Length: 255
Image 1 (tube, rainbow, N blue to C red):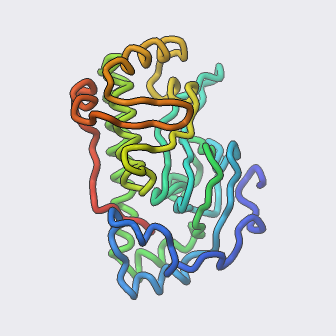
Image 2: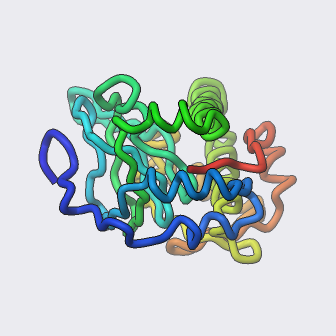
Image 3: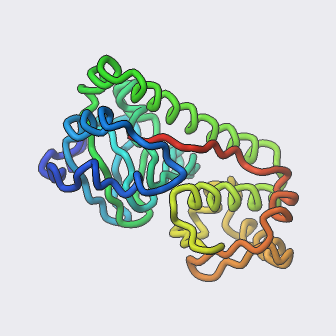
């Protein structure tokens, strides 16, 4: 991967047919029409496999591609000059990443893979044809951008106004619900691939302070979190601690 964009050789052309897209099997995503599916089959340029810890986008750089997450987790973040990191949010299956770079020319944040990731790749220079030929798909992109802003607004209120316990409860609920929507929850369990450092950088506290508040919150009995396995026991009570449920809009759209 070069410093000024993605090497086309990393993208496998035609690796997964759009008709076999794993996202289309999930009830939380809207169905594509046969005409939209045929268009997307030609619009897609291929798939990309990204290893855990690899950087997909770097703040200030440009890329010729925009991606839909097919599997795995990524996180969006910004770094301050002194190296402090603020995680903005997380990307899961169905999310569109790189749209900011397609609109503004360069990325205003970086994106890193939390797990091995599979991505569906589109050339950003061809996006105008999508808007021209399939306005409904163009509206879906607008919907995805609005959803990302809604998530960001929830996180902004959380970091700015909620107490430590409220922040932790809210972010846990938000990530659980989004994972559930992406088909990643089995029963009431989900694999959270992020570390304590990731979580602390998400809620804006030090790792030590986060761990202390987390230990106190565990005693509420609303969840257990062992290793990377998170199990939700009492969603209503955790939402009460959080001061409300996160915003979740369904059915979701994807391209």
